[in-house]
Length: 95
Image (cartoon, rainbow, N blue to C red; front, side, top):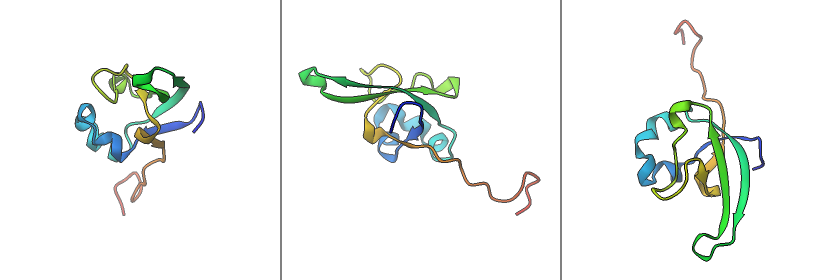
């Protein structure tokens, strides 16, 4: 992943306690964000890489991976590349 990629929540992230309410939206492709920053933390209790995401939908702007994490900060295993959802049928509802 690199800055500028479109991402969404992985199945692992959907299972995290603060994100349980977003399950249906994430699985249907309605949760999409832009990766805006990748940073390293050197603190012993918080080492590793953090990915900062700006969510496209304003109602998702406060999504975070835990109660103590800042909104928009996730680990790599929490994110996956966004793929547009498959549309079955045309816009008139025909299959």
